[in-house]
Length: 228
Image (tube, rainbow, N blue to C red; front, side, top):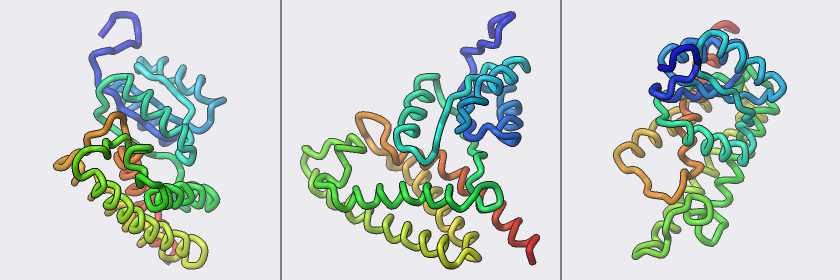
């Protein structure tokens, strides 16, 4: 640690998504043992948030981020990777019915639906054009076929989410449980069977989506109990 400065190059990175009260509290807690990247949709408020964290002695940087914007997701992924080793992810942005609005949930699932259709319709199933996987190796056509079939499963899940959001909102906790379980399996399996790609694929965001869906699930269950 450098004396008289907030810079702590020896500490790992904590990525905190969400700059509201919960996000700032999380950033302050993690800032005791991490360098913090605070990603918030409110670009105008980020300078003050970064300054507040630095006044508390935290090595922090605040960046604009929109989870529903694919380009923004790609920029954040690249930026966070360039800061150093990432140890902790905390997603506290308001995406549950109790913290955000239904339009936000619809936008998030719209991106999931689009990604599913790319896996199904793209000639390479998005393997090389999006995930940067080398499909010219022996067995490359099998990679394309498997990703296409995976896109079908993703589309089915996205379709069920559309039905829940539009007609059966009482099933939101079940919907979030399925999403959380799927992301947990994806992250867990990825630890044992990692993908080799030229750059970070969009699927790497499962490590961000998992805590987000888990928080949303917990809050939706709590809201459901309070309404009984």
